[in-house]
Image (cartoon, rainbow, N blue to C red):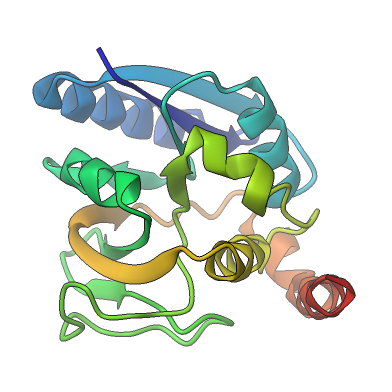
Length: 201
């Protein structure tokens, strides 16, 4: 049976969020007949560092780099076929009240709304999903929280992958606040790190 490895960074105090997210991945992959390898990475300084460590430990056919407060919807595994064809899918993310947070992004925080059509070319995916054997071509990402996803999508495009909206790749953002303020405070430094990393490649 095919296996998807899901990397979930988390920090102390977010156990309830992690439990909800873990349960949703277990339920949705089982319903789709896909085996799940959950890689929980705890208390790293940044999301990027957690993703790098989790990707190193993953062994599945596909690699999804998630968050402890992004809960997958039923049917998200349908995009695995697109991933096999070279698509880097950008998700549709909704808030707890059902309103759209983004349906694709142009990167650097420029979010598109739910009018974005399926297949629309975009610049970034907040939930990187790839064949695991793609990771050596695009990773590791920068040791940042903000822009670690932008960097991976930039590398994915350079590797010839198509970054596109896939509306079936859908999540609810629980928007956990523990640890959030510290990460937002470093966004300017992370942006600079991203810019420097891209220009060095």
